Image: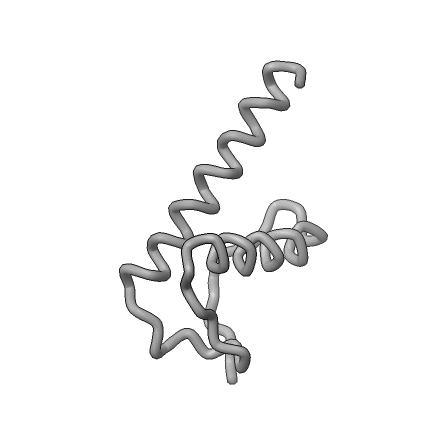
Length: 69
């Protein structure tokens, strides 16, 4: 399967952490991710929920770092 993702990470080493976060968030939301890595059968709503929740977490983490925690 070709990966046509044009997004690039500022810190490429963060890819594994983001993948782990994706699976954690999906589990918390009760969304089953396909084991084969093909997301074409996933609903837009489910994928958007996962992405939105990840974004919220990353913003919270950044705010905590900026606050000096």
